[in-house]
Image 1 (tube, protein in one colour):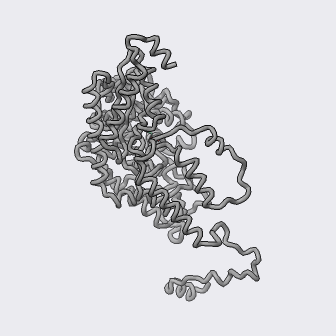
Image 2 (cartoon, protein in one colour):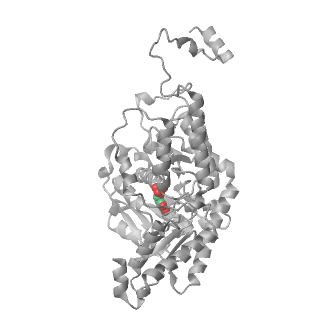
Image 3 (cartoon, protein in one colour):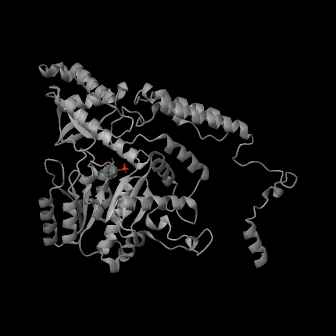
Length: 521
Ligand SMILES: Cc1ncc(COP(=O)(O)O)c(C=O)c1O
């Protein structure tokens, strides 16, 4: 095209007429591809699907939290490859019959297991828009990447990170922890050699790199050490205090012991909300030690970091702004539909160096679609990436951060209410201090581990409430992680009353251990 014509095309912002090529005479195979040939019918069906999902959310309280999947339903997922087409409406019907009633249940206010967010309707709609755009956020120059960059900037602001910090959406905090540990590992080789470890591998390091996290830290950190080639044993687990926070004196001793043994301590991990009890490590104290020891400070704030949005929790996170990296999820306390993990790295250039990988087919240009470098694929292992940022952008904008902060505060109030109900009952006992939104307790019984494991299964299978279990000092606890924005006091009452009812039914036997054992078997 001549310069003049190309200029004219640009100035007209010309819309080419592609339809002239769509001539059935010239192209007898012409069809609509995978798009519907009958848009009005498809549109009606689409609206029905949307309405059904709105109904589901609106009437969620009328359903069981969770129900086991009957064998015949499970068997329906063992079908042959669907070579022939099935009508959209028929597949949706299968979804309504076989998938929807047997989902995880974390949308329900009675779900209190693990640390699962409840999602939100605006985020759900944004997921549909994102799927319509079908954007690939690995790179290139397009608006969806600007949406992600906007959230990176908001997160810098929220956590008081510098303008040079980088951020990236990932599946969840497990992946965010891994990315942070890889950056820290490369940094540990010292900045001048940062790229060397990528080429030569960790084995080229003459000293063993060691990291430190509390015994209450999440298992994904050990996994990350393993995947990063450091070995899971290189993550030293530091004892905790009575509040389940990392013991700083013990930490200092362990670092010195490793130095004396010729190892290279490089990483401290602080937990902002431990998975078992919601304990927040002394992040300020960790930042001081990281500075003195010239070590990288990573904070695992999977759910707790967004406590920054709640005025009474934010001061307890003091020190988070000093972290070299921070991992957290929007899909937990942020209520963004799964999945929406995030990693923030103070030194964006170090982050880029740890992952950027030049390739001919990823060449960058000053203009055109290949502009806009650096790209998100330069900051993590994924090349193709979905548009997680959109459901997060919608959630933050539609509800506003104040309202999201209030939902976080309310889950903590509910945890305190549950704590009070436990304290008021002589049949229940608390097993760990309540720091945020997580309550660990049990029904008292001489056979407490088996009784409480059974109570949790019965609660889940009855569909009235879904806590999970964990072990506190070796004892099995019923663990209620109140994360869902829909949960209310009435749901806590159902949990407590049902726990007591099931406990009484299976444990009259405090005086009769044999009868109890017979029931439990
Ligand atoms: C403290 C902590 N870290 C990491 C994770 C892992 O997060 P994800 O499940 O998003 O990978 C969790 C999950 O509950 C967590 O509570």
